[in-house]
Length: 465
Ligand SMILES: [Zn+2]
Image (cartoon, rainbow, N blue to C red; front, side, top):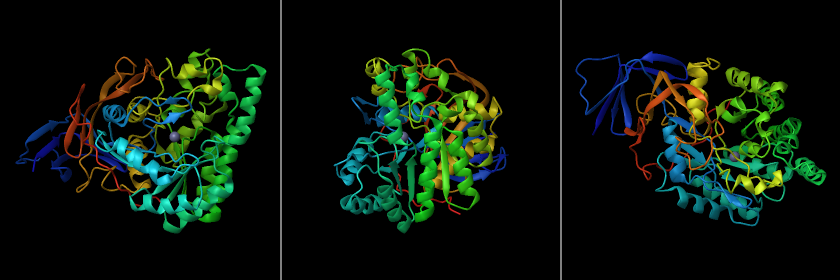
């Protein structure tokens, strides 16, 4: 079995940092040794002197090659997973999408066929439930048996993904009975649709009206409602892509009374703001849902504080890239036709690292926690994933805290023609990424294989109280 020694570095985990050498045998971590232990022989020696060794990042929310209106998100599992690897990720969780009228099991099989043999990093799935009926509930038993232990529903997008409160409750009852977790996109879609049609009728068709017709109060209202349904049914609830201070308050209040309610936010809400939509049609590059929020209203500060205080537990991307040319441009005369989504998968873990070693607004151990360890626990992958310990998969990032990195669409690996972080200078640089003992990114080079990622059969939520 091939042996690799990563020596001289500081191993960073969710609960501390220690100078340790990491001995890898085959695909797993065989030993953690005192620094520069004598007489350790290995086939490959990786010098991490002065560097930090992080567990591979886990992006728990991506959308590779999915339809949105007339457009399909540009990254395939192949291109998106290679970009994710460059960004220090060794696992992602994507979403089969059941559309209204379609069989749920069919959507799982189609997405598996797209991903299997095409992914550069390990991958799992959350199942989107778009049509709640008896056949869907029977199919959910089948996807659960395939290791899909979390299911996403929407209070947004009436006529597309939307479920009624009764339908959501029915799936929550089913999930509560078997211990799995429900993910919610929480925005009041019916009111948003009204505001959108009124804006278009007034002639307010520019991208900024995407944000102005999805106010944060409607995200807070929907979060409050789904938390009430989770309390009723006893299901673990994970609210995805939180952008608004109102939702952080709802999640914090639910957790304070002991409910298993969890919150995810995304780099775009932590680093970008609503003013980016207010620059003519260029603003289309920043259209996602929920929208980027008004910085002056304090949402961003609340999100950062929520991460530090464990009111929010996970940072994921909601990666869903559309080209500006030809795709975002579908909405040039009408913001409601702009495909929703941003390219983020390559930069999430790097941005968090920057926040830790550069801006120092997030503790380094907490950065590993929200970027790798808690996603692994939340979605039943721990301790195989998300941590550097004996027996875990050897998923490692060698990171230089003194390095730097400039984000640009001219150098990124995502298959999309712009970057929403263009020109941003990050402190810290990822030098090597290892997936299950194999170096898959070495400096500028991708050295992995696009079929090397394995499907992850996931266990139940390990964050329950
Ligand atoms: Zn999403």
